[in-house]
Image (cartoon, rainbow, N blue to C red; front, side, top):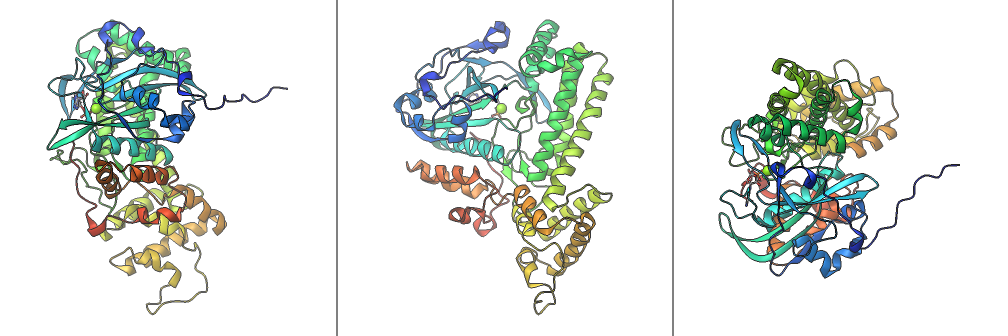
Length: 508
Ligand code: AMP
Ligand code: MG
C-alpha cells in the first residue's frame, strides 16, 4: 500500500538550500550582485506560516543568523543573488527599461508546494535603480508584509512575505524615514514587463528563451499543448482574470497596476499604495498619485485586460498575428473573471447555487452599498449572521425584525435595507438550503478582518518607536480573517472618524 508523502518537520535555517534557476539564464536577463549591507539590523516581524511554508521552524526567527540572512548581510548556502531586468507600461505609457531597482532574488528553495523563490526587497541599489537609492522604508515594508500575508489568508492569489528586518539607516522620502528589508516569496517574480523588455528590443531569441523558461519551470504541463506559447498566454489571461475577480469580490485595490507590477503567474505583486474598500465606492482611487483615476476600484478589470493586450502584443512574435493574440486574451480573460467573480459574490451573499438573475442582483447590491455608503466588509459579515428566513420574532417600533437591526444600522436609509432584505430572502428561499449551513458558509466567505489603512498606520506608528508588538498582533489577526477572534474585535471596526477614503502616498 502506498503511503501519503510525509513532509519533513520544520528545520533550522541552515537547512535552507537555494538554487537560482533564473541565474542560469543569460546575462541579458539580470545582473548578479550581492545585497548592500544593512547596518544594525533588527527583526521587526516574521510570519510563522510563511516560515513553515519554506520548511523553517518559526523559532528560527529569533536567531541573529536569521536577521543577518534576511537583512542581506549573510549569504545563505546556494543563493546566487541577482536583480532581474524588465520594462513596462506605467500609467498607460511606455516607460522603457525598469528592472529590480531594489530587489535581490536569492534563488528558489524546494518545498512540498514546489520550488519557491525568495527575494529581498530594499537591500540596496542595483544597475536598475536609475536615480533611486535601492532601499525601502519601514512604513511601506510593514504595509507590503502585512498585506501579502492578509491576502493569502483571504484566499487571494498573491506573493507571500517571510519577514521584515529594520535598521536605523536613514532614508530620504517626503521626510527622513528608516530603512527595512522585506523578504518576499513566490514561485516566480517574472512580470508582464519582462516579456515586454525583450519584445521592445526585437529580441525574438530572448523572448523565446523567457517563454520556454516560464513554461519549463512554472507551467510544465503546457509543453504538451499543440502551441505552448499560445497556451501560456491563455493561462496568464485566465489566472489574471481570476486574480482580479478576487480583488473585486474582496474589495482590494492594487493602486499601481502598471505592467511591470503584473505577475505572469496571476499573483498579486508589488504592494504599494493599495487599499481595502471600506465605505463602498466603486470609483475609489487609493493611490494619491493616480490623479486621473486610471487604477480606480471599478477600473481594475478593464485595466487587467489592457495589460493583457500589452502582453499579447509582446508575445505576438511567438504566437502569430496580433489580432490572434488579442483574441486569445478575449477568449480566456473575461470568462475566467466572470466565472470567479460570480462564484465569489454568490458565496458572499450566501447563495448555494447559481441562478438566472444573480448577476443583476449582485450589481444592484453593489449599487445600493454605494448609494448608502456602507462599509463593504461589515456589510457581508453582518448579513451572514441574519436569519435567512423571516421568522416569527419580535419586531421593533418600525415594524422591522429586531434581528435585522445590526445590518439596518449600517445604512443611512434603513427602509432601503429592509427592501433589499426582502429580495435577498426571496433569493435564498430558491436555494432551499438549511439556514445553519448557509450561515456557516457565509462565515467562511466573508472575512471579519481586512487590512484597513488605520490598522497598518497604527502598527507603523508603534514600530517607528521601536515597538513591533502591533505589527505582530495585526499579522496574527489577519492570518485568520474569517475567525471571530474576540481579542482582536477592535480591528473589525472602520476607520475612526471615517478617514477610510484617504488615498495613500506611493512613496516607498
Ligand atoms: P514600483 O512603482 O515600486 O513598482 O517601482 C517602479 C520601478 O522603480 C521599479 O523598477 C522599481 O525597482 C524602481 N524603484 C522604486 N523605488 C525604488 C528605490 N527606492 N530604489 C531603486 N529603485 C526603485
Ligand atoms: Mg514594481
